[in-house]
Image 1 (cartoon, rainbow, N blue to C red):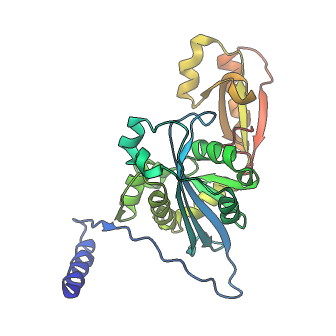
Image 2 (tube, rainbow, N blue to C red):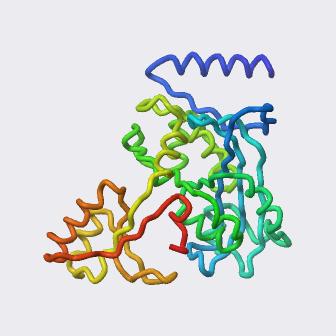
Length: 298
């Protein structure tokens, strides 16, 4: 059996040398390591939640997965520190469509509770939390655990322009395939292990790990521009330009809005003045950083 494994590995390596083949390997989670004394690293958290629905105000977390990892100043992932995985029994039955997607049943979560102290202790020494849809996950975990309110956040789905780096999209499974792996999708900690390998993948366009690109983007300020009281008939034009709709919940305006880099603010204001309002306007602006971005508190 061992010899067969060696032969298969050699065959896979040989196929990878050919431009006519690509080999996907089953993702094997990394074994936690012990940092060397004096080694200069920072610690991050990869996080994923499975929930009973999409509304962070009323739906509940049924599974939390986290992978704590160390990374160097150049974005290279040094190793995995620790892993957290736990179920949580919600106050209502898990919807059938959620079970279909995640494989999580009422029987699997029965009697399980997330340990608030354990979650806080796991996260406390990290400098950044990363999810593959931080707009979703951050809102849920901040509702449960205040420790997440004080962390810098990054989103590996929206804060890397994957198409510019040769990928056709940003879906996690597709990105993992591009890094040469496949895995069991839609379980929280498995998706964290998958994201780790995606972020450690060296982008051919930069020669650096994807994590380096993500960290650079996350460190930059963005400006949220609110197109309040914009004409209804221009909603499609705003959507095409990347504006999203806020329904007025969480204390936010009921309005279209867009997030842009600081260098793009003048162009966006010019667009609103000349093509939306047809007059001089001073839209509401909000400055966002990694500490506030993706939070429902903003």
